[in-house]
Amino acid sequence: MFTAPTATRDFALKAVAAAERAMERHECCKSQFKFKCFSCGEFINRGDKITKCTAPCWDGMRLRFRGADARNGLTMAETAFYLAETGTRTWVHIGCNPCYWDSLPEDSNEYSPPALRSVYTDWGAKISYEFDEWRQLTNHYDMEEFLEKHGYPQDKWMKDRINHAVTRFQAIWRGYLYKKAYPLALEQKRAEDANIWRGFLEWCGSLPMETFRSFPVYCQVTHASDRVRAFGRKLWTMQVLYPVQHDKQKRATETKIHMELWDTSSGTDSDYDSD
Image 1 (cartoon, rainbow, N blue to C red):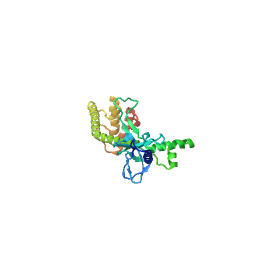
Image 2 (image 1 turned 180 degrees about the vertical axis):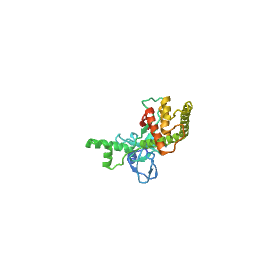
Image 3 (image 1 turned 90 degrees about the vertical axis):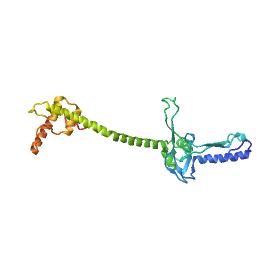
Image 4 (image 1 turned 135 degrees about the vertical axis):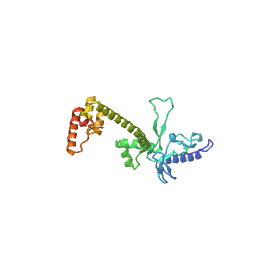
């Protein structure tokens, strides 16, 4: 409740006490309802401990001030009041660290880019104050150790959840783009292979009939690029324009001749393993 200027001092002290109790509940209290925590994405069940967020996440309505001040004859030490708020982004689990997207005005520069900004919570303020006192007494600087010793829940950052979701979405979108681009890339690859093979056939047709023809010789004579050499290395173990012999011994001899020709004309095997 908030006192009017005409309220008595005793009534103002009661309003201040009620405001202080409410502000203590803002730090940590038990939920009376089941709703979704917008920070971690999990449900807050009845009985779970929750804490209150502040203005950057406000999406509801601001109510009147609660408490009393010097208009009712109170001193500075006795004054206490707070602004009541409603909305879906008002309460989160204790330990949750929410954030919001700060787009900033259009005239902002590179020193103040749009980013995810942390949201102040009453539980976070309480933990920060207690951690500073504990650090001065123990000379320890580990927040996780402090939370474990006091039985407090570990921090859960909304920013980490957003980064994970965005990374996952980017991977899905990248896979979708690759799936769409694969048929086009495959068609281009086949067209390039067809051009290479057409050039090889044209070279073979320009030679006399008694001349030995093979793809390694073609690469050596025409000073073919690595792409052409890789094509021949990958697809054609032996390509000679005369009838193929089916005898195993002759096939082994032809393969051996081809390997020697290839090694002397177009490099070692390691040059084309990556393709």
